[in-house]
Length: 367
Image 1 (cartoon, rainbow, N blue to C red):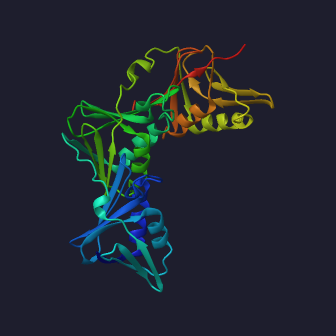
Image 2 (tube, helix red, strand yellow):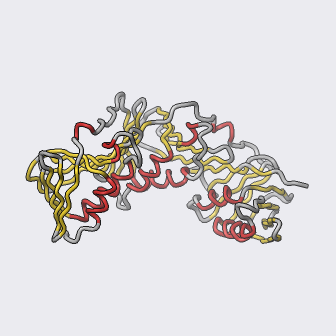
Image 3 (tube, rainbow, N blue to C red):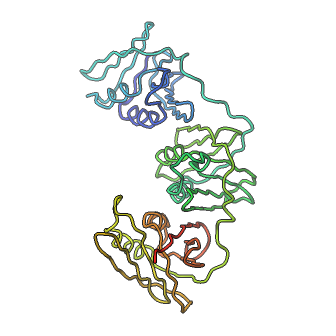
């Protein structure tokens, strides 16, 4: 194998593909990146048996072939080369020469046959959507993915397609995030994508306007966008019946400016630390929300204007981080907060429409 390419293009590709490489593995090839030249293209692949990332781009190929190189060493070497053009040549003894400007390196490679094959995805159902829409949907739900392994299926996000509507749902036992968007394809699907996979997909989604294709099989999911293909295993298990957790009735609906409420919570939360934990308490009334917090070091009070058609007051407390995360990901200037009682779930939606729903469980206030 021998090829010549631009350094910056190779650095970008290696950096992205490296995210799927195992940090430590008993199989040396899994700590490496597969480089394969074919025709006028270079294909790079990283795979850790759960997540795989591949990309292919045009280069100057002088000899076709394939080799696996340690991802850490290869990426660091290419990134720090002095020249703008890189020449890489793999010899018969698997010693790989890397030359750029005055810099020359030799790395011992691994036979490409030792690199495990990516899983084949059967019974594929595919749909396409704009990159910016998928990016928004992931951002508005991934913050609520569980980080605990008590129920592994909740460490991912549910993708549900029905009636030409894609719904993403994340839960962690204390909160829920739901986002809906219309799609063109008339499919009926349900699968759970690991949160780790979605974070990598989010990094790869470009800023420019284009589409992403999502292909779902029985056990794996494929995201194809911008010369990259991400393949991941799906999570197995029964996802929570999220519809039953969303309150239908309410005692009070409050419209409030998102940033005003978020900034107020952030201010009173200055007295809260990992060691000094305490809930934030809110008293919702017709035209204002009184926000307060008490910890062993002191007390904080604040007030935010709001609007409500209900004349009565309602007092409720919650974890400051959970509410702040919801408000920060609302992506709207004003939110509607629906309350059913001091111990009932807090529902947060856009002032108009139902594109997203956030649920935050309240905290019992000590008397």
